[in-house]
Image 1 (tube, helix red, strand yellow):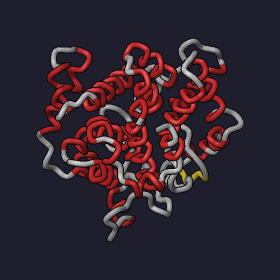
Image 2 (cartoon, rainbow, N blue to C red; image 1 turned 180 degrees about the vertical axis):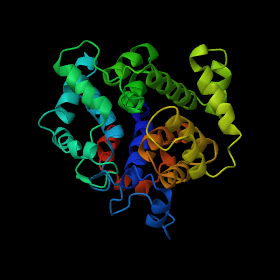
Image 3 (cartoon, one colour; image 1 turned 90 degrees about the horizontal axis):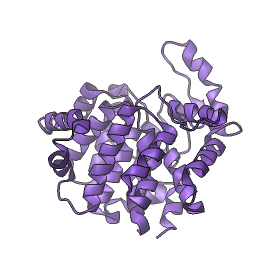
Length: 315
C-alpha cells in the first residue's frame, strides 16, 4: 500500500479486534467470555466494563491515529496546527467523546467501577491536549500519564515521512511525557527496521541502540523478556502490568511478538491476556504488518473493521 499504510491498517484492525474485550482486568472473567471460541476477535457483545461502542469501531488509542490520517489526507502543509484543530473537532466540546467525559464524575465516586458508558471513552492525554489547545499553548501534549497515545497518534505521520526529528513534534501534540516519547520512538525504530527488511527487528534494535543511553532501560527489559518467551502470555502480562502505562504495555507487547510467529496468533494472544489489550494490539499489529506485509492481516478481520475502508481506499 502507498506510504506503507498497510502498517496503519494492521494497527487499526488489531485494535478493532480487541476492542469488545478492552480493559477487562479480571482474567478469569475474560476466560469465561471466550470459552469455546477459537477466534474471539470482534466479539458481537461488548464485554468492556467501562464503555460500549459498536463492534468494528476502534478504541480511543487508534482513533487519535485516525484523526492524524484524516489530517494527512487533507494535505501535508502545516500538519501540526491542522492536527490540533481536528483533535479538537473530533474529541472536544460538541463531540460524543467530550459529552461522555461528563459521565466520568460517576467513575470517581465509586471504588469499584461497574457502570458502562454508552459510547467512546476519551483518554487523559487527549483531555489535556484539548484543554491546552483552548488555552493556546504552544506545546499541547498531556503530562499526567505515560501511555500509548503519542505512538498511536503519530503512526500515520511516521509512515508518510519517516522523519524522526519532526516525529517528536507530532508526539508532543498529544503527550510531553518523556517516558511516552522514549517508548514511542523505540516502537518506531523497531517498525522502521521491519520495513527495511530486518529478519528480526527486535534483535536489530538491541544491537543498533545498545550503547545509546536513551534506550538502556528498554534494551535491558527486552533482554529479560526474551528469557520469558516460553511463559504463557497472560501470566507475563499480569506480572509486567495489565494497565495502559509504559513500561508494562511495551514490555508485554514485546513478549507477544517474541512468542508468536504471525499477526493473527499474536493479536489473539494479547486479547486473551486482558487489561489494556488495545494499546498492545496497536503496536503488535503494526509490527507484524511491517514485518510480513499486507497479506499477514486476516481478510475477514479487515472486513469487520469499520475504519479499514478509508485506509484501503488509499491504495
